[in-house]
Image 1 (cartoon, rainbow, N blue to C red):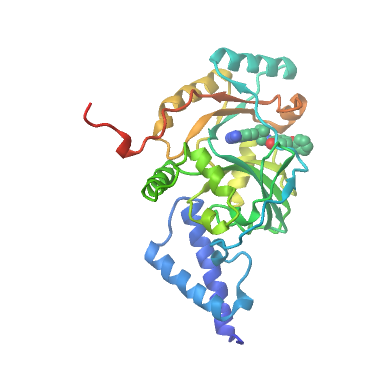
Image 2 (tube, rainbow, N blue to C red; image 1 turned 180 degrees about the vertical axis):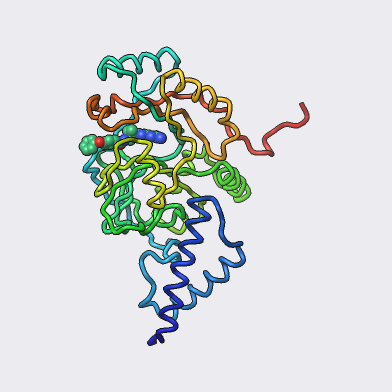
Length: 328
Ligand SMILES: CC(C)(CNC(=O)c1ccc(Oc2ccccc2)cc1)c1ccc2c(N)nc(N)nc2n1
């Protein structure tokens, strides 16, 4: 059915407005409208796009409901490897890491500390500002193509504010509250429950039916610009700020430290705060901030020499309320 210009404009307006509201709610965690307002506009867009499918765009907010059922996952080659991190478990090992870094650089660098989210590493590729591929880390060189599933994760932008080519990496995770609700529902349905939010996120992302992924309330935190494209950034801190400006969800708990002692107090601080976070973390990632210094330090076969992960002991399991025996 042909659409009048008024209808075409209304569809474009609704797509842009609902994308803006979605970004505010899912990326910035700062809702602009209440749910009823959002739902009414969303229903109007669904009806208009159903009547005029020629105007339903790939990056419309209605494109996130999933529905593709894949026969299997295609392989995804990572041109730039997704490196892993060397782990440290004690203050002494952390300070030894700093000593090795200083020996190579000849000076004490600034470090940036980031939370290590207990989720699944993902890589997102954009061409001319549009999401064209999402992949799991796999072995760092070959992962699985999970583009259809990632499109249902509301915090992942389907389109960037600039028509640039870019590759970014980060974590896809399931918030603690979603994990508890999912397990409670699975228990009621007599299904096997997930052991922890990380397994629940992995199980949700590796679904062949993207409608199931869409129902699992997954979220993301991005932390690496792998292929900067035209962006000029010289430090990891700048890269995080840039990722936020591009519309990616960035974990706010990143902090530039001017000494390894400061890194250690950040680690101690978060060891205590950990149980209050709405997501699980398994450590703190410490990175030399300046990219020039990172380049001097380079990589081992597996991991960068300019970063390490201070690992926390496993957190006491996220219990469900029912599990707590109040009689003792
Ligand atoms: C540091 C890096 C390994 C990412 N960095 C890279 O993957 C990476 C890859 C090629 C790079 O540069 C190259 C470019 C072209 C060719 C070869 C290397 C630089 C960084 C990493 C890994 C896991 C992380 C995690 N779980 N949480 C946080 N918060 N940060 C993390 N950071």
